[in-house]
Every structure is written in C-alpha cells, then in structure tokens.
Image 1 (cartoon, protein in one colour):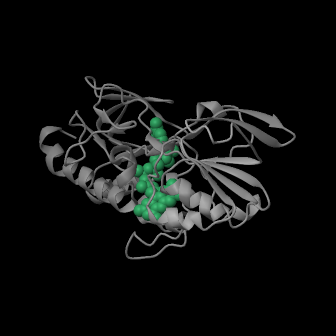
Image 2: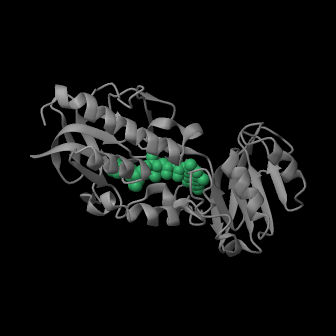
Image 3: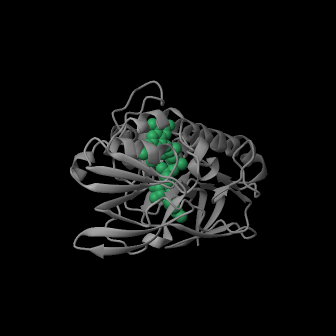
Amino acid sequence: MEHVQVLIAGGGIAGLSAAIWCQRLGLSCLLVEKTDRLGGQLHQIHNEIWDFPPRVYAQGASLLEDLSRHPSVQKLAVRFEEELVAIDRVAKTVTTSKALYRVDYLLVATGVAPNQIPALDGCPRVLPPSFSTTAEATSVAGLDLAVIGGGDRAVESAVNLTKHARHVTLLIRSNHLRARPDWLRKMAALPNLTVLWETEVSGFLHREDRLWLTLASRRPENPQHLLVDLILPRIGVHGNCAGLDGLTMFGDGYLKTDDFQRSDDAWIYGLGDVTNGAAYASLSLAVGQAMKAVKHISMHGRSSTPF
Ligand SMILES: Cc1cc2nc3c(=O)[nH]c(=O)nc-3n(C[C@H](O)[C@H](O)[C@H](O)COP(=O)(O)OP(=O)(O)OC[C@H]3O[C@@H](n4cnc5c(N)ncnc54)[C@H](O)[C@@H]3O)c2cc1C
C-alpha cells in the first residue's frame, strides 16, 4: 500500500491551490483527479472573471492557463481518471478507483456537480451544464427553448438566450424567484420570454427533432404541454460527496468543516465548493481555504503526526 503524506482529491482551483501550498510548506502531496484534465469548473466559466483580484480574466480558461504555468503546478504529481471512492476513518486509508493509500492527511476538494431532473433521463435534446448562454448562444438562433430553474443562473441564461432564440420559456417550480429582483424587471420587457410559475416537466416525447414536454403545474391556467427544440436545466448543484460516508454533511451533499477546514476527523479536510454550499461558491474562497488547511496541517500536524 502506497503511503502519501497529503492526498488531495480534486484538481479544481481548490485542490491545485492546496498543492501549491503543500510545496511551499515542504509537505509532499499527490493529487487524484476524477477526469482527464485539471481545472474543474474553470472550464465552464465563459463570463469575465472580475472578482478574483488583481487580474480580470476574460474567462475561466485564461485563468487556468496562468494557473497551469505555476511552477508548483508544473511539478505536481497528478493521477488522472482516479477518483476518491471511500475512506477508512480508523485505519486512515483512502480507496480510490485505482488504488488504496495510507495517508497522513486527506484534502477533499471535489467541488460540485449539477443537479439532474429525473423526468428528463434519456432525453436527447438537453443542453449540457457547461453550455454557455453567451459564447454559444448563436447556436440556438431561431429555436424554441425551455430553461428550467428559478435562481440567478437560470434567469440570466433565459435572458441571454432571448437574444438569439425564437422563444424562451422559463419553467419555475416555486412561486417566487431566487434570483435577484432586478431580473424580474428585465424579464418583463422581453417579448419572446414567457415565465411559467409553479410548473415542472413531468415527461417528454421526442418527435422529429423536437420535444413535446408534459408539464405539471399548480396553476390551472398554465399549459399542460410545451413544444420546444432544446432544454437547458439550470437547477443548481450538489456537493461531490462520494466516499465521504459517515462524515457530517449539510445542505445538498456539502462537507461540514470547522474554522481550519477540518471535518469530523482531524486528518480529513474539506476545501472549495464541496464545503461552501452554492451561496458562497467562489474562486477566492476556495484559494483561501486551501491555504488555511495546508498551513494548519503544517503548523499543527507535524507535532502530532510523525512524517
Ligand atoms: C459558469 C460559472 C461561472 C462562475 N463564475 C465565477 C466568477 O466569476 N467568480 C468566482 O469567484 N467564481 C465563479 N464561479 C465559481 C467557481 O468556479 C468555483 O467556486 C470554483 O471553481 C470551485 O473550485 P473547486 O476546486 O472547489 O471545485 P471544482 O472546480 O468543481 O473542482 C473539483 C474537481 O474535483 C474533481 N472531482 C469530483 N469528484 C471527485 C472525486 N470523487 N475524486 C477525485 N476528483 C473528483 C472534479 O472533476 C473537479 O476537477 C463560477 C462557476 C461557474 C460554473
């Protein structure tokens, strides 16, 4: 069984920042990443990033380019297509999809994944979560779309798509928007946007490259069917908590941590979106948490755990 001083699960900005701090503080680390590339959600950011000082980045890809050039990231030991599967909290071992490790510290930086709509399982005309309603919006020119969700991203997506789509229907499950109130004003002024409140998709039929959606609504005046070309679900995310069984969680699969990013077990830390919940998901918080966790290991771990 391989021994690893600090095992980092997840190669998004949280995991990569943790790796940088490990190298800076003289801890040896190994990073396992589920997919075949580093960056996590940075690949999905097509908007300008202006809140990660000091630079303004045109999009996530340019930030990732900078990050990948960092000397510590270049030197980093990464195992791709290897995911955290289970933790033995007593034996201090970590099982991944490819190996079993004995570890001194585990940093969980597995981020979040989009929620799914069971009624759309197998539906061929659902746009992927990474679909950019700015960079890729022209690909829906002249089409009818349904956007599902009531948060900022759903509303922003629906508004963006109206610039190119023939018609956009926003399906909102509740009777209020979770998005910023000023969006309501923006939406009301758009002639090709319809909002169906308290309405969900309950099924679909695929006919000649179009979708015949069956709708369930508490409002009798709302239609029971909707014909669209494409669907864009924007119904939020959940923490990637696979393998974290037995640790205290909150909300939708988020790992609960203390002030130093420690979970219930002093050798398991959580950083980035998997510990933050959707409301506080941000690049700067992920980077700060990585520093705090690794510094804590460096300052307190050495005395209690012989490396
Ligand atoms: C469209 C969009 C726009 C955004 N815009 C901004 C913005 O302007 N400013 C801002 O501050 N924030 C923004 N964010 C949020 C920001 O991108 C995230 O807060 C940040 O990237 C989270 O980083 P992370 O490392 O915690 O998680 P992630 O980036 O999700 O990385 C997690 C990594 O872990 C991997 N993984 C998952 N499960 C496992 C497993 N079991 N084992 C091993 N690896 C695993 C994943 O493949 C992924 O590579 C935006 C997000 C999106 C989606």
